Each structure stands twice: as C-alpha cells, then as structure tokens.
Image (cartoon, rainbow, N blue to C red; front, side):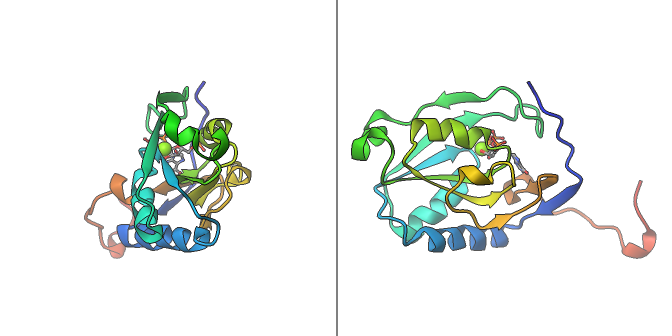
Length: 170
Ligand SMILES: O=P(O)(O)OC[C@H]1O[C@H](OP(=O)(O)OP(=O)(O)O)[C@H](O)[C@@H]1O
Ligand SMILES: [Mg+2]
C-alpha cells in the first residue's frame, strides 16, 4: 500500500554538504568499530558508503538492494531485489556483529526494519533521519521533521532562478 506523502518542507542538499555530512557520519562511528564489512542499502546508501569506507578503511563492501518508492515519493511495496551475501551474514555469529549498515536516510523506518531483521546486531548508520525511523538507527548526523522531503544532490541539477523582484513564478 502506498502512503500519502506530501511533505510541506524541503531540505535540498548539495554535493559539498552531503560529502561533509557523510564524512561527519564516519567520524561519529569511528569509535564504534572495528567493522569487518559495510552493507550498503542501494541505491541511496551507495554514495555515503563510498565516503565512509574511504574514511574508515573498510574495503569489504556488500549490498542489499531494496526498492520501495516506485512512483517517486509514494512508498509502495518494499521489494528486496538482492539479499546480503551469506558469507557476510555469517560473520561474527551470523547476526551482523562487526557489520556496518549504511543508508542515505531513514524515513518511516520500513527499509531499516527489514535490514535489522536480517542483521540484528549490525551497527546501522544513516546520514539523515526523520522521527519515525530514528529509533531504528544507531548513528545519524542530521534530523529533519517528518513532513520534510530531502532532495539529494544526485536528484537535482542547476536551474535558472528568476530574480526576486519578478515575484513568484506561475
Ligand atoms: O525509512 P523508509 O520510509 O523505508 O525510507 C528510506 C528509504 O527510502 C529510500 O530508498 P528507496 O526505496 O526510495 O530507493 P533508492 O535508495 O533506490 O532511492 C531511501 O534511500 C531509504 O533507503
Ligand atoms: Mg534507499
């Protein structure tokens, strides 16, 4: 079932800001390791996972491929397109101890709870968090309100801005 999602506020994030926030995430979790592997939740987790793996020197990177928003913002059925490889799940007792799970954000928490079921002892880190999903993450950098939509740099491009004096367009 899709949920009605029409956030009132927007939070646009530039590449520069995202890099700084992802690096801050690496700093914050640097004392929580050591981590043997990163499990990155694609696609949004790919970029922060690259930054965190570089900062913390973690070279074993696995993915779990999950899609839930098939029509842009509206959340639909959550589909696991690719599972975590067995050798990574089997590390440190089979519950994810020593594994760092990385995603761009936690919103309703549905994606995070599915991954937690697979890796209950993993450390779960996201760059951004909304209140509903926040209890499911161990570490995040910035919290935004539930009615805020985060625009990631890979979803945006440069666009002409009409002068303020021209008034609102449309
Ligand atoms: O907490 P939730 O409400 O589950 O939402 C958070 C998830 O939604 C987005 O992924 P999406 O399924 O849209 O796929 P994408 O990463 O490929 O953009 C985002 O990257 C998170 O993984
Ligand atoms: Mg995602």
